[in-house]
Length: 70
Image (cartoon, rainbow, N blue to C red):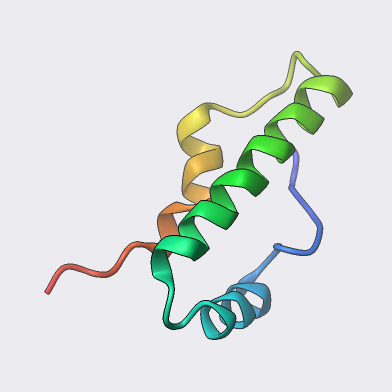
């Protein structure tokens, strides 16, 4: 699977986003879902035969924003 690189790659970006959206977790999820949508479109254009499974992309872009179970 190709590595996705860019502004949202890696824990430092996640930390920054968490700080920016600290009072708006839903807004963070919506923003990241829009980034997921754009990245998927880009991947399909660049290499339609090697697109990761939807679950892999969701996990990479959005799943980390969920609150841990209490």
